[in-house]
Length: 202
Image (cartoon, rainbow, N blue to C red; front, side):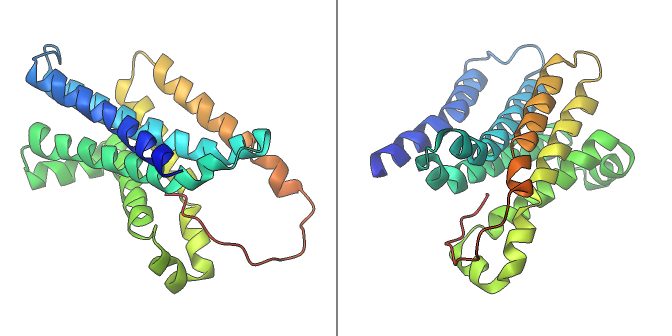
C-alpha cells in the first residue's frame, strides 16, 4: 500500500512538473499568464472530480483501496487551486488588493470561484484526525460542502470561457453523473448504527 501511495503522489505531481517545464521552455503560448491560470484551475477541478468519484467507484466495483487515497487526492485539488489563485493574485493582478476585491464583488465567475476556494480551504484545514475529534458530528456536515465547492468550480469555468463551452460542459456532465450515482445510497434502507472510522473527503 505504501508503494501505491507513493506512486499516486508522484503521478499527482506530474501536472505541476509539466507546467514548470512549459513555463521555463516558453511553451505556454502568446499569453503565458492565461495558460498558467487555465492549467492550474483545470487540474484543481480534475482532482476534485476524481476525489468525488472514489465513493461511486467503490459502490460499483467493490474496490476499496482508492478510498485510502481520497484525502491525498482532495488535498492535491486544494494544492492546484492554491496555485490557480496565486497566479491570479500575483501574475494577473500583481497584488492590487482594491482591484481584486472589486473583481470578486462584481464578476460572477470570480465570485463563485473564490467561494469554491474558501470551501476547499476549510475542508483542507479540517481534513485531519484532530479536527474530526473536535468537530464531532459537525465534521461530516462540513465536509459535505465539497459537493457545493465542485459545483461552484464548474460554474466558475463555464462563466469564464463564455464561448467554447464543450470542456466545461463535459465537467458539468461528469459532476452530474457522480451526483446521480450517489442517489441509491440515500434511498437505501438504513442499517443498524455502527461506529465507523471517519475519513476525510478532502
